[in-house]
Length: 161
Image: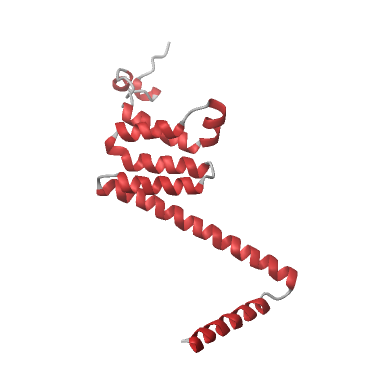
């Protein structure tokens, strides 16, 4: 019978005696908070978990991960399409954190969120302009009338003063 050496089998004898690393409770909680925020609709409706309470409990317990946990909570509401609630969470997080590091983590994610919301609104506006252009033939005619009305209103205010 051929004998297989550890080199040829790809398994070293040193690593086979080592136990697998066990994640700390903080690391486990961080991973589960990330999972909870990414699977928001499934957890609420199917499993009946109160993700908000779970993450807020982690914010109180793991004080060195507060910034990341606040952003996970806001991400949870974003994925549930509760944008205003997510904004409130970002603001609450920024007003309650005590370290600059946590504030900057929340602020960076919050500003990225607002930039993406602004880009989405701009895209929607450009899409609606394209639809208006296709149905009316000319978009500029209405804009000229609006600009003229604005000029008239400004002229009236100037005359009154």
